[in-house]
Image (cartoon, rainbow, N blue to C red; front, side, top):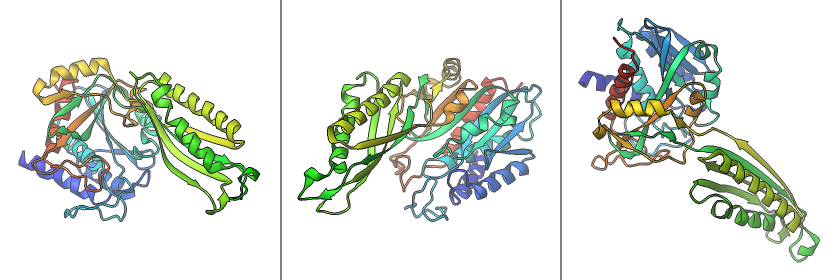
Length: 378
């Protein structure tokens, strides 16, 4: 136990110190690749800086495990000895822990010769941004394998330390981003009738958008719309000729997500007509919702003792693990890290985010139990 903790702690701290963004994970890639090769694995680079390694078993039937790799553009505030060496970048979502657990699990299987099924270790870039999972599931090495199921653990500061969070069906939301440009006509502030006020139109648009979730969406179906930025105006005595806004939308249900977008477009047209401005709205659909497989959920509820897990509610988060689930049965599991006694209560994406690394051993043992239940061992 002590040796296992020391190993996984070393991996986590090494990786925590070198966070990188998106696909530009060159130091992280080198560290993970060299570590896997030191265990005796051959590695394949996917999605620019992602990595896949496979422990071959007696059968080509494969059980896959995924860890995300990228950090966040956050300046770390904690003064821990392993703090980020990269200014303005931090592992604030637990991806360093996810990689450390999967490396330690890969190490535990490296010398075993009793595997009945093969095991795939997936290290994925760009989870926080462009969805590296989509590129990985389209890669040759992934497509060619007979993958029976894929699993992932995610550290969760909302759950008590050491507890697993299980849920059947929809777990995270469909998400999208939008960018809006409103074009009017400027004029002197003393002659507003000679212009078309884009700033006034923007304020009306915001008010009407925020009625969508309260008046156009089924109250029993969760959805969110948030406008996070607005820029407008050239001077205090000038009617604004343009305004730009940006925001995000999320919903668990596909049809309500589409309804939300349709209402936005209807409001855009109404604003154009009411204020005699032009509204351009670009909506980009991002990740589909994570939907945990029914059979895998039932199986894991039997694998783990009732005291080891909690049944959790869906989260209005977005997660590109959903792309794997479009190709293979998959289960996304939360691993609790909340510990009020030790002060580990910071939310995900906090500049003070940290956790008790002994929890990572629970994660390794969880992967071991999952592998056993999926018939990987004799």
